[in-house]
Image (cartoon, rainbow, N blue to C red; front, top):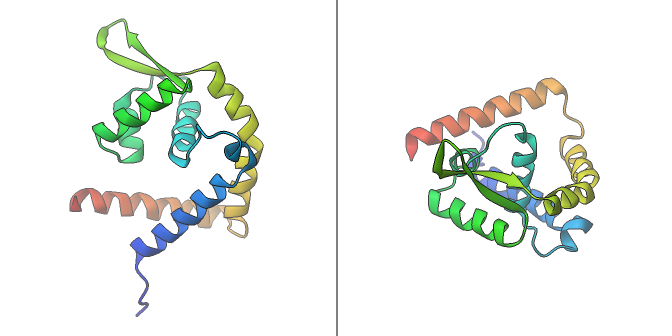
Length: 146
């Protein structure tokens, strides 16, 4: 039986991906960008046609309400996002990207695409589909554990 552990392998892969992202020139030039902020911005851009709220960020990244609050507050203070009250419920605030975030994305896009291509090099579409299926199953398994 293989002595490797899934959790350890995922942690190592995550560490290497984060190191690669931290070394992207556009990220190195901008101290406001961190790995998690880039992931959140990417999530917001992918879902730009829908209203996105803090609870969506919490669910997407598996973070607590407190962690999401701190992240989003700091992103708002740094001009990457703004939180706008929704007409139907003033307590509810949707997250909107700023023009500054769009500028950051333009500078990052090609570099992130190149990093993603390197990451999936040598994998077929079927293998990638299986990988995402496995990740989804791991996540569901951990929901039962926590």
